[in-house]
Amino acid sequence: MDAPLRVAIIGSGPAAFYAVEHLFRQTNLVVSVDMFERLPTPFGLVRFGVAPDHPKIKSVTKVYDRLAANPNFRFFGNVEYGKHISLADLREHYHQILFATGAPTDRKMNIPGEDLPGSYTATEFVAWYNGQPEYRERTFDLSHERAAIVGVGNVAADVVRILLRSPAELAKTDIADYALDALRQSRIKEVYLLGRRGPMQAAFTPPELKELGELEDTDTLVDPAEVALDALSAKAMETDTDTLTKQKVQILQQYATRNPTGKPRKLFMRFLVSPVELFADGVGRVAKMKIVHNVLAQNDTGAIAAKPTNQFEELPVGLVFRSVGYRGLPLPEIPFNERAGTILNQAGRILDSNLQVPIPGLYATGWIKRGPSGVIGTNKPDSVATVNAMLEDLASGKIISPAQPERADAERFVRARQPQFFSYADWQKLDALEVARGAAQGRPRVKFTSVEEMLAAVGK
Image (cartoon, rainbow, N blue to C red; front, top):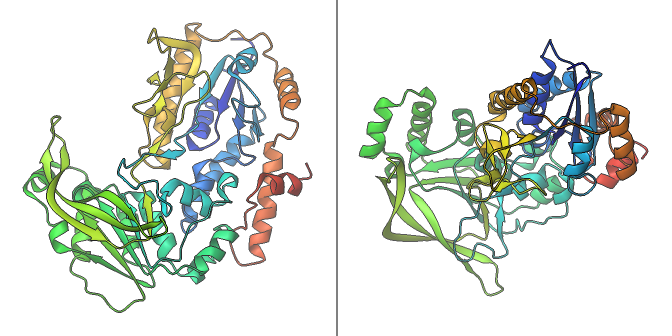
């Protein structure tokens, strides 16, 4: 096409930026990208999901900064789809619209007592300690001595570390100040990490698992019987070509040989157990969890699944976090697959709910496209695949014909709807202020944690 291809991207996490990268790599095409984000700051889960004690993972934002420096890129932060802008608005200004909104909520355990005070989602805790403005007012009762975390993936491991690291360790990170203050008062001494299947099926990556055995103030303890491979897992291990799986099992089995060394805190890593009910104390708060012991069996699809036995156990815990998977949320006017918790799509092309055919010009990428799987880098091939579909559709003329495709028209309409939008220059100014505040305390950064603070900091 002669004029630039105008693309709107809703969301600003890794999947969004990897899509920008692939669009800008097209040498035979001029692409103009406008990125919309409901929060003032970009980067999604890199800023609000990656644990504060994992600063190296956050260095990926340097790549995103380079992309944002392209004159054909604009960032409109503090602009919410469905509130400030609608699908009709976007169709007025863009040839293609890409949704990269992630999976911002948790799946439920669906057990009695799950909604009792003291039972929380891992995502809200992660967002809280990372300074996400919408979660800064949350409170978590850390006055109990025992906590349980349901799930054995990297997010569950993050929650374990934040609960069990010493305040001195956390004080060297970019954890939100209010979270650091609350964790300084924490009385948590024991954490149970619960997996419904065996060690081979745990979703941790080996580095995260290894960290759990290296906590300064914590003895990490594993029951040898729970990490011994059953016949099904042993057979699966023989044919599994993934060396990471073998590493994971070896690490857990090594932990099972450890004895307590007298450290002030303990982490009990449990496998082949599932929560079945949470019970309240006299004032209606979580006081204990009932768990069932499982065995492994093949399900109808041949996958190894947990099958409950008639053996139960009770854990005296006053704090529970569930980390059993993220889930996407529906967006206004965008077809949604309720069962999967994703936008209804085929290889990134958003489908009409009734006709099950692609809607011209509408696309999805990242977790809202495929579900919550993989690490940050997994989003790169996913976004490349969606962008390739967009380029195929462009070549065959299956795009939107916007009435006002000029860049200036789009900025005028955004200014009219949300005068307090955040540009990328505003973000860079805020970023520099946060880093300077951190340097004064020997920390990577001290975050602004409310939208009002962010606006005031850049003079809006």
